[in-house]
Length: 112
Length: 112
Image 1 (tube, one colour):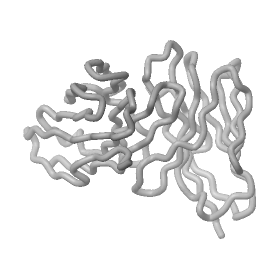
Image 2 (cartoon, one colour):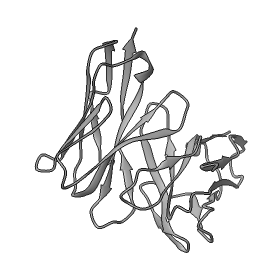
Image 3 (cartoon, each protein chain N blue to C red):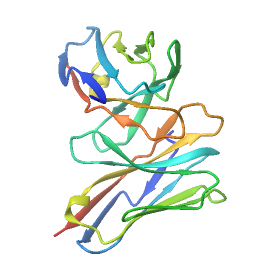
């Protein structure tokens, strides 16, 4: 089974609102990553948070990590129509195995 | 830099045929992986490699072979295509486990 599970599966908001997506995972991790996929395209890496970090920012993105709850959240502030995409979390297992496992993703629609 | 190049972009196979999906990267990345993505789902790891000469199985390796004779290339071989292998295949590479993946644009494979 996949390591990361995202919630909600789909999210629809108005432009300017904030979007929050959650990810839960099952085993110990080295780091957790978030990716974006526009329809029919490849994935684009957004941000990586290491297991010893609790929060990380990149532009309008804020990622938190709670290793005790095995969960992470991605917050997109002041969303834009161009943020419409699918967002995936992915976990890198502990032990530097190189094995990156993806969740099923959250589909975000931002209405203009 | 071309990044991660996948060929072909589209392919139709008959059941039982074999073929090789090509993946090449020019970023001197050690880590490479193959994923498949089925409609409405996340990515599932097929095989991955942490360096030339080293490969390992992912979540769904059955029916696929890989080899990594050079740092640049990581071909995926379908031994005897089945309709269940109809999917979009993504190749990705990264420098090491503390970096995010760079994805190719994908190969859309249909097995009839």
